[in-house]
Length: 197
Image (tube, rainbow, N blue to C red):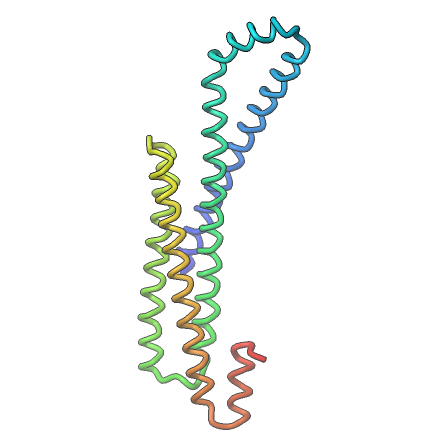
């Protein structure tokens, strides 16, 4: 589990670094654009028209690059959100598994079954991390925006499903433990264990 958390932290750090670089580049490009706009306001209308035509072609690539940088920042912010949800999922798993292991209402066989389910959820989490890594690496490759967006949304959907499965499984186990508690004292102990009102 520590390996998973370290992997997630590395992904988040890598995404944060790329976002910072892209934001710096965007700021530089925006400053250059402001400088151009200020220069334009000082020229006469005819000169502006002539100059604009000349500059239009010269800076066409600049504007295309600016659009790409803005799109990349959007993608990276979405990837960062996805990675943060992965971290929340691992934290939820860690908390729930620790509570379930200390819950006396479950047998050894039930704990073994729960461990298998949690292992499956963690494997799905690793697959999601691999998908995120693929998306990050895709920025170095030539890939269309539609394909990249599809990959991001697919990863986000898988993470949402896995997270929902984890939370549902945790709730089911909590409810089962409450149902097995026989006395008011046992019910109070289970509620206290799981932080229920």
